Length: 106
Image (tube, rainbow, N blue to C red; front, side, top):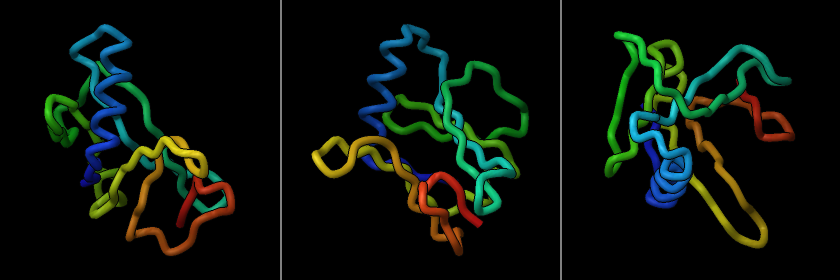
């Protein structure tokens, strides 16, 4: 399943705190689509399925469905806030090819 860096945990935790709904979790999913075959999807979710995989990072819950978990095994979610790069990025060792926009992979 996906791992979060300390920076990602801090940013996700701050964003969830802004939502003022403590039961929310970050759902990370892989969906068919994008220019390379699959695309990443991330959003806050309060509804969970029995077969979801859940991890807790210092109080920040991350939820992944079983089919996405297979494609995210060994992946890392990071957050950067700098002059050159700002935002979330996923480093996925399972991706053999990525597109120019960095939003899809195969």
